[in-house]
Length: 201
Image 1 (cartoon, one colour):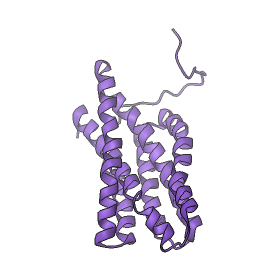
Image 2 (cartoon, rainbow, N blue to C red):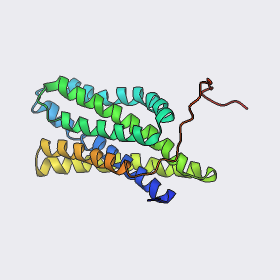
Image 3 (cartoon, helix red, strand yellow):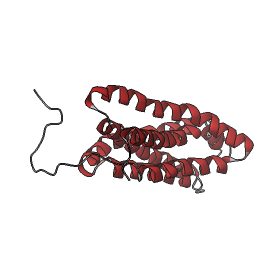
Image 4 (cartoon, rainbow, N blue to C red):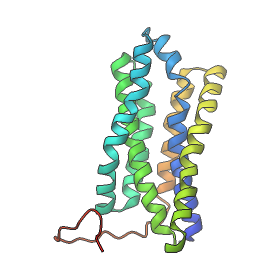
C-alpha cells in the first residue's frame, strides 16, 4: 500500500524517537545501578555513561556508507535492533564489563538509526523543504533525550532496574517493526566509478 511522504516522515520520526527515548531512559538510572548492585565508584559511572559515545561516533560514517550501498531502511532496522539488543544485554549479570558491552552496542545502534534516518527524511522531502525537514527530524532526537530520563526514573521508582531495561529493549524493537513498514524511495546506484565524497562544481 502506497503511503504519503508525510506519513513516511512521521514513521521515520517515530522510529528515531523510540531509539533515542531508550538512550535517554537509562541516563538517570545507570549511576544508581553502577554504585548500587555493581558496587563501583564515580569513575565507573563516567566510563559507562561515556562508552556509548565511542561507538555512536565510529558507526555514523559506516552507517552512511552502508546506507548509500543498501538503502536507508535496512540500516535503520539493524540499528534499531542493535539498540533493542543493548536493552536485553542490561539483563545479563556480567558485571561492569557486560554493562560496558551493552553501552557500546547501544551506541552503534544509535549511530546507525540517526545517520540513515536523517538521510531517509531528506530523500522523502522535496528539494525546497529539505532544510526544514532536517530541522523537524532533529526534534525526534532531542525529544527522545528529553522524554527518556523522566521515563527511566519513573520506572525505577515505581518498579525496578529490570523494568527500565525492559523498556529500553521494547521501545527500539517496536521502532524496527515500524521501520519495516515505511517506504524507502532511495535506490542505490551500482557503479564501479569512484566518486568524490563531496561534489565539486
